[in-house]
Length: 329
Ligand code: UT7
Image: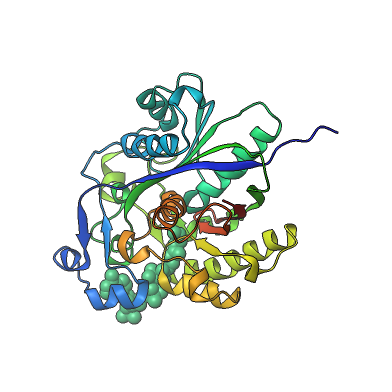
């Protein structure tokens, strides 16, 4: 049997728009207040893109940093996977625009849609495609400009989201570092609890649909909250079992940054201490598919994790979808 190398992370990068929207700014837009937002979600501020700003540019910026960090050039990348639900256009895939911006002429590029779980879905797909030795250097990007599909009159949702992109470059590992285990799951029975019904083939952009704000995010927050905690804790336990590990062996768990109370409830279920739990939702809000790669890059660059650290990743999002993974950096 040939010895197929593990896939490892060679570099990471992130990019967020410059503009910051604070809770105080939101108080001027909808009937909300800083105290409610902080107590119920832990969010204090979020980065927001200018109206009409392309996700491809933000994602390409994150990707360039990841490629540089990996010590590679754009021409070395042979696969680009972008996880997003807010691409530049319906088609072509935003990954193709990113490919062009990077000059990554040797890559195959496509998008995947698994909402907030998308980045880990992308990791698993890239890992499988690399393990059959067809691809050598993959770029996996999670990026969303969720504020482009938010109803700014709906206080239940508009205070929660932020924009950004995070990227990793994957390559073959020479040692025990790499993607140890991944798991993805979904249940379409819950699709109506978190969705955006506009801009697909069933809801054309008619005057009436636009008036109904059909193109904006709808969410049953309480229900999503409940399912998120249960599904993420099960998903994390699943990859731990697959890897024959226990949660105390993880140096850090980066869970999807949607709500501080969800992160804390998950930590309790997984018996994680505060040093094993990463939190940046206070500064970024829920950046959807970007949340995990942004946190991963931030934790690496500020020294919370380093080469050899063992990290758990876990996410939950619309679909419902969920996903988890264990990587050794
Ligand atoms: O990324 C995918 C995963 N997404 C998530 O994980 C999000 C999951 N859900 C949540 O994070 C929480 O459910 C929310 C933060 C969205 C809401 O927190 P909650 O504790 O579930 O609040 P709620 O929706 O039950 O609302 C409680 C009250 C309501 O008032 P009444 O009906 O009790 O009078 C809301 O109208 O808070 C009110 N409310 C607000 N008040 C001030 C809702 N949004 C706001 C707001 N400011 N922005």
